[in-house]
Length: 431
Image (cartoon, rainbow, N blue to C red; front, side):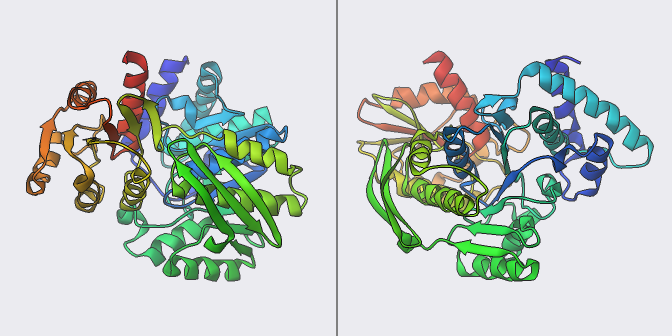
C-alpha cells in the first residue's frame, strides 16, 4: 500500500459515517497490541480553542527539550497534519505502512462480527500506533467530537484533562443544551485525574464540577481576573498572568485576538500545574518562548498585505462572534467577506452576526458533500441590503474578492475550516 492508496482507503470509510462509542476502536487497538496505553497524554476537549491551546502547549514543551506528539482534527491543507511530532507531520511512507497493518486487522475483526471502523476511528488508531512506535515524551491529544464517546477517549489515563470554552455546536449529536454538551465534553475526565478548564458559562461549569466530584478528580478553574491584557493588535498580544501568589508579567503571543490570550492562559495554567506536580520540567523562559512562538494556521491568520487578506476557521456561532470581536482591532476601510458554510451549521445566526460588518460579500461553496450551495446561501442574504456575488469555485471567489478590494481594505474568508484550508492553499500557491 502506497500513500495515495492509504488515503483512498481511509477516506473511503466515510461511507460508514460517524459513530460515537469505544467498542469498535477498542477491539481494533487490542488486535494491534493496545498502543494507546503507552502514551503520556494531555487530553483536550471543548467547542472552540482546542487547536490553539494545543499549539501553545506543544510549543512550550518543545522549548523545554521534549519530543511532543500532536493529534488534531480536522486537518487544514494536508491529511498528514493530523498527526505530528515536534511540528513534523507523519511521513507519507509511515502513514501508508501503518494503514496497511490496520487494514489487515480490520479484516480480522469484521470477520469476527464487529462493525467496520469509521474514518475517524482509523485515523485515531494510526495516531496511537505512530506515537507508540516513535515514543514522544508527551502527546497532546485533541478530541474529535464531544469527548465521552469520542475515539480519543479510549485512553485510560491522562496527565490532565483540559477543557476549552464550551458552547453550542454539533447539537444533533451532543445535545441541544449547554448542560448536555458539557456532559459529553466532561466525559474525558478520568477517575482521580486532573482537570483544568477555561472559565465556563454557569450551566457548563456546574456540569464539569459535578463530574469532577463523581470522579474524585481535582478541578482547577482559572478566573478571568487573573489576566491583565496589556496590548492587542494585528501581530498578537501581550498580557500579565497571576498564578497563585505570583504575577507573571508581559507574556507575548503571536496569535491574534483577545480569545487567544485566554487560550494561552489556559495553557499557562496547565503548564504551571503540571510543573508543580513534578510531571514536567520546564522553566519560565521556556514557557514564555513557547507561547510567543506558537502558531496555528487558519485562525485569524494574515496571509497577504495590501490589501490585508485574513482567513479564520470560525464555523459556529461562538467562533464567529469571536471573529467579529477580533476584527475591531484591525484598521481598514472596507471589509470584503468571502463565506462558505456547511448546511448542518447554525447558518442564520452566523449570518446575522457577521454580515452586518461587511461592505461586499462573495458567497462560495465548501468542497465537500455537506456544503450549503452558494445560491442557497446567497438567498439568505437578500434582506441585508448588501452587494452579494456568487462564485461557486473557491479560486474564482478569491479572485473576485481581490477585484473588489482596494489596498486599504480587508478581505476575510471564513465560515468553515474546510473552506479556509482550500483558500490558504490556493492563495499561497497562486498569489
